[in-house]
Image (cartoon, rainbow, N blue to C red):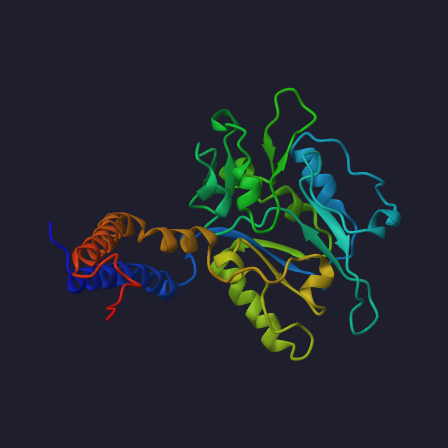
Length: 305
């Protein structure tokens, strides 16, 4: 096959255009869309009193040990994270409210609308259900722990100390929801800080509270856009990062970004080999032409009279 310079440029242009189009297609895509009727929880941190009743209810519902230091505020001395034995924790914020009150926030799996953990699980042990929960089917798990790497919030935890370890995280009380019951944590909240319902309706409630109380809340709903959207939503009168909520998370779902980047791979794989082969052939041909030109290899010779 004879390849001239014009053919090479055409191949290179096609390969570059394919990569660019793949990126553009990814950039045009919006946030993940929750299934109609999917459930969620609105956490109004201005109402949370830090009683940790949700921790106790979660432990009981999941047959786990009782929370550490119940009723002891010393537990708030440092930021806590979830663990295989504690699927949800309440943290005290590092900044008080404008009126001088302590602020608290519950942490657990946020149950992303388009979860990176489920996308990264090669065994499909993590599954996003239409009703909202991201559930874990341990019998499918290979123990690769890709989900732990993929999660932008660092939620999944691994049972390192067990002989037969599994990945552990909040289940959003999926089994209770199947029976028509709310998540255990939301059922026991005494202050109304945890509101369970359809995600679309919760967003409207959150926006209404922010609009009807100008200056009270940070004008933003945490979880509306983070990682493409999450089932757990937060409103607050102090910066979210002071409550232990991670900032700087992409507004696009992580699986979508990966899909956009990889969508051009089949085309690039098809186009780049002939391009590289063409460059190699062109280079070798130029060397051959140069070696056959008159005077080749006689540099430095001259005429002497």
